[in-house]
Length: 281
Image (cartoon, rainbow, N blue to C red; front, side, top):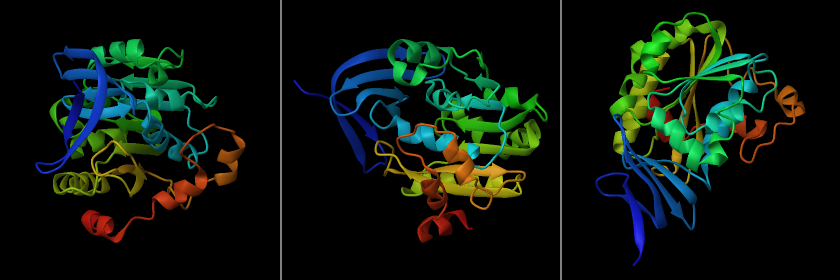
């Protein structure tokens, strides 16, 4: 008998992966956690029925959410990461020797525990001594911070369930206050392709552009996310993600990546016309 995992991308579109076996099936106070082993994508990590990552393509997401900030900001030392319990974002951040301190705020402790046990390809650096994990609501944590971080990364789920508060103007305003005067915020920005996702992307950009003086969006290809066309937001108090990029400086660091490079960085901010219209640039 064949076993398949199916995610509903819209009411009319479904995405299915043939699975070999289910490794984790756990209901926490916050969400449903599932991990599947598959032939095509390796381990597949699912929250509330939505694919968060797969072993085959997670490097794309995690490289694109982390490295662009380092190619622009000359000295990132103190970082706050919201979400990211699977550890992939932390893995990429800890590649930089210049980073001194990373606070990671994850609402669901079981996500971290399960990732450490079953997803070592992403969770391998969660025990780095520079990483300090707090199990609490990200919005509440940020609200109590001021002028502490060079970089904030919001590696969140979709604006549903426990992740809803991370897509509000109030949250973005609190992030603004938590950043240094030259700080950068990178946030998960949804997809511009399907109607509901595009409306969410438009809403997110409108809220965040009302808080930060520099608010741009960049794109990347994520095979297992709805439509494959996905966005991150790059917002800053000072730095422009293309005008202030320091290609030579970043290249000399010798950071090993499979997807990201500085030429791709610049190009990723060149958006198709339909996306520009959605975001009302």
